Length: 293
Image: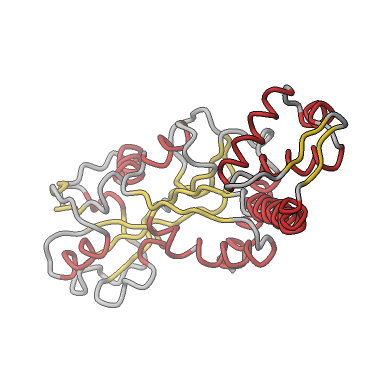
């Protein structure tokens, strides 16, 4: 039973006229009459007495009218509540992040953000390639991306942290007691590149220093690269954040000269960003500072 038919019935009965009810509800008189005929056929008996002096409820209509009003009131209350809940949950921040950032930063960031903004959802997508988040951002599929800084593009950048690079070596690698690993020493060595696509940060450093390592063709995750280094299959270079919790079975030394990748968040436009996204970025900056300390 359609609520608009019940609403029209009660309006016609209250006003005593199809003409007046049609004007109030925005129907034609013939359209309203057709609607009432359809309702009575659906119910199986007349609900309105039609006379020269207007319309009024039949005896059966009088008995049903209070229930119809309660039905319409409950329906309106339901619609209002659904609308309110939908509005309160309508804000969703779509985030893409490298695995290391998603693992070590995002849980604390989201926990803090939700404590301050409990009605806002945060949807996270892990990136399996250094360029993937940038592509998603440019396509409008992400609101903010957690990445290392790449070539300039149509986005605004917010710096978060310089992630220091470390040489990753077998435990028995002959370091000669050095406290750092010269980047030049990668020359000619079998080099295991970290997770697919994240070679851009490392190759940028190698090109700057004129390093020509013997890069091994691997398509594995960072944990596997560390395991391969442990078993003497080559050496590697990873960042402090990537290596977190993975250094027990390998030797790590900071690169010399010092090298790092710049981590931060990118958005299409900081000026045009909605307030909730600006609050998320501010929360991110605060939590990353706390984690770094």
